[in-house]
Length: 371
Length: 98
Image (tube, each protein chain N blue to C red):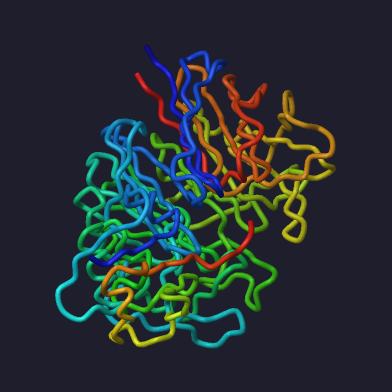
């Protein structure tokens, strides 16, 4: 019987939410790793029972947890993230050189075909990879060693590598995004990288169209059409039709083009979702109304989706890794809020229901479609 | 036998209840205790001190016999009461809310 497993990372632990294909009755397990910040939990596409979780704490640092039974039991694996060679410096907030310092793992991206291979995006921004199920991690140092690396600066949330996209059409192609350096692409499995930010315009920068320095919040793609990318930037929703070589704005009629997550419908590559947030100074929805916006035209023309979502006095945020879609026939869409709600839609966003209302602040939401 | 008290989250991570008992041959120092802990409980590696530099994580403290030894050299000998097990070596997480 088909169903879904929703993996939720929060400020105080991880939760696993499961339901059948109706997605109306939910079984909730957790908190796992209670009291720890769980930045991300994600399952292997090659083995749905293999899960990885990034567990971190200001006191005790980074732990990586692995489950081989779909989240019923977990065991810590390797947590040694050491930059390759002499780390050097990047720019600090005041423009002075600052040594690269590992803080935490923001995002874990398991390989599309090997459950033992996982990419980790970390703060300070770097890309690591394990090929032994998480026991050991090694930096793909070509990214941080890019000639622009020493000029990268952190965003307000830290200099995090938060997005990793593995291109199913080109096994050697990887996209990543860093706040606030921008988007980068590798065509050789992560050995060498180049910025792919042409067309981005960030007015807060001295040079708004600079090669790097853009605060990209999230990138997404439909696996059947990996040359088309969608981006939620600090401000602006963007689209690329050429694998990131160039970008154009598709914010269109959104009430605000600031936000964090962006997702693509599982069966309609031109249907995308964002959650507009009032501004970078306020970080809550406009007018106290929580609305997902959907475009069925690949951007520019957007409709508000509000049925079942709070339409008054709602001042939560939805963070960049906190939205996901399932691949059931009627595509499910899920997102979590900083207020601790996890909402699910079993009808492509037309209507929403809360799975839970009172979790700790949600940092990430992923979903696995189980057959 | 050396007695060590771990903070709640490290006890959970290491799957231990109560105090940890360690046998240390040679001089009993903070470094020797951390080495022995990491050998017996590898999942604690990196959670008390840096993997490479061995610097104490900034929000952890080492207490023994009513003294804060956090800033003592890691290879300094520990008090006799720790060596003979009369007092536990305490690893404390800094108190903070939220």
